[in-house]
Length: 334
Image (cartoon, rainbow, N blue to C red):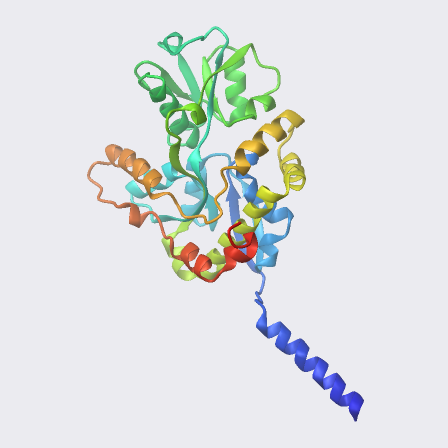
C-alpha cells in the first residue's frame, strides 16, 4: 500500500512539473538570414545551439543573400520570419507591402569602405564607381552614408553600381571595374587575394554612429496576426542566441566558421569583437533609424502616407521584457 502511494505521489509531482513549465509542440517555420558572416550569426547560433527547438520551433533556416530578396520571400510567404534591414522594410512598405519589424538585435550600421590603394583621399574617388549588392540593400545604405560622411555626393561625385554579393564585388574590384566597395568590419580578410587596397573610411569613425534597424526579425502583419505566439518564440530564441554570442566567444566563432567558408583567425577575432558590442540585450527596433529609412523611401514614393508605427510592432518585445524573460537569460542588470 505504501509503495502504491509513493508511486502515485511521484507521478503527481511529475505531472505538476510538466504542466508548470513551458511546453510547445514543434511548429514548422521557415526562417531566413541574409549573410553568413558574424553580424548575422544570431540566426545560425540559434539553430546550432538548439534555441529554436527549445522554444518549440522546427525551423528550416535558409540563406538569402540580400535584404531586398529576403523581403520578397517574406511577402510571398516562402519565408515566415526573416532577417531584413529597415531600408528593405521601408521601401517595401512604401510600395504597399504589409511588412513589420518585430525586433532588432543590431540597431546600427558599421561598415568600412575598401578602396584601391591609389585612392588616398575622398577627392580621388570623384568620377569613379563603387560596387554594392543591390539598390535598397544594406550595402547600398552604407555606401551612400559613407560617401556623404566624407563630403561626396552619391551618384553625382561617385557612381554606385549593382554588382552582387561579396565575392562578386571583390572580383569586380580586382579587375578594376569599381574603385571600392562597402564591407562589414573584418570581411576584407575573407575576400582572398585582392589588388592593393586601403580602408578609406570606417562608419564607426564617423562623428555619429548611423542608426539603422540592421539585424531584425521581420514578418508580415498577416502572419503576425495569425501566428503571434510562433513569432514570439522566434524572438525569444534569438534573444538567447544573442546572449550566447556575447558570452561565449569560442562557441560563437565555431558556429561562424561552420557557415562562413574561409573564415580565418584574423576575421573571427575582428568580427567577433566588433559584433559582440552591438547586439542588443532588449531588441527594440530603433525608431530613429526606421524614420530615416522611411523618409528616404517616401522620397521615391511621394504619394504614400506612412508612419514609423506602421513599420514597427514592439508588442512582443515589451511583453517578453515585462514577463522577465530577458532578465532570466541575461541576469538582472546583465
